[in-house]
Amino acid sequence: MLRTSLLAAARSPLARKVVERSPLTKPVVNRFVAGAETPDAVEVTRALRDSGRAVTIDYLGEDTTEVSDATHTVKAYVELLSALSEQGLAAGADVSVKLSAVGQALPGDGHRIALDNARLIADAAAGVGATLTLDMEDHTTTDSTLDILADLRADFPWVGAVLQAYLRRTEGDARDLATVGSRVRLCKGAYKEPASVAYQDKAEVDGNYVRVMRILMQGDGYPMIASHDPRIISIAGDLGAGREFEYQMLYGIRPREQETIARRGDTMRVYVPYGVQWYGYFMRRLAERPANLAFFLRAMATR
Ligand code: FAD
Image 1 (cartoon, helix red, strand yellow):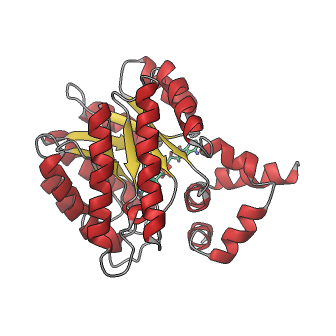
Image 2: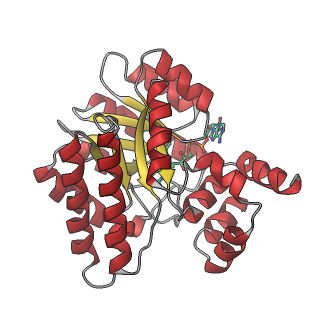
């Protein structure tokens, strides 16, 4: 119920105004977001790299309705990749891109615009030795995103995909993607989805996560296990013993556990969001976990 309300608020312009304008929100947002500008993302990357963690960086934004905004997002990624390169931090870094931020949601030609824009970012990543992963958004975009992935991979075979364990279709998608050279991030899924396409029950989502993880671990691709769930992390360690894969977690969530995993020699990649458009991202984090919401309310109450 709470999760549903928060996910609805994540897409409500009115709720957005209220939350964004509150001066009390900022310190809490800072826990999950690296900062507003490129240098902020670069500095967080440096600190994470110094502690043995890898990064995938997200320039925040989604549901773009103007071509100029999509172009602005592409420029931000190109500038980021160049800044990482100048600081010697680009090799091995990854950028995460929401196709809706580079035009997928534009009426008419959105699919093609998003493909062209994602290609520009892939090209910039290739130039500095970084990689690109296409984030997955709500289920109405899944087919378009997987089509764009296939087109991009013809030229940039290392472009990664994301699969969401809550979607009923994901087992089939995982079989299609568990092939040589294919980087696949598996997450539970963060959007409000109808029962016709997505499991609603947490136990069912978790069960499907393990089923899909098994397919990816037994396949020929490169699994990226994105979860903070101790049970999932432990099963991943068992299923992935002796093969290459990586763990992924979000910036600001379970940082001690991130360090522990990195210290034992496994690859731990942290998803680092930055930019001023943090609202949708932040609300999805609150929806995921009542403790995040309690943290937010406590911070507001004590200021
Ligand atoms: P949950 O079921 O939320 O939590 C399970 C357990 O994990 C909890 O019981 C607790 O023990 C632990 N835990 C969770 N959160 C915390 C916390 N804040 N502090 C301490 N312990 C905690 N979603 C998409 O839809 N598309 C994407 O492209 C996408 N990319 C992602 C990339 C990365 C790297 C990650 C980590 C997540 C991504 N997500 C994405 C979000 C994802 O779908 C989930 O919404 C989110 O990760 C929460 O699920 P969980 O697996 O952590 O488990």
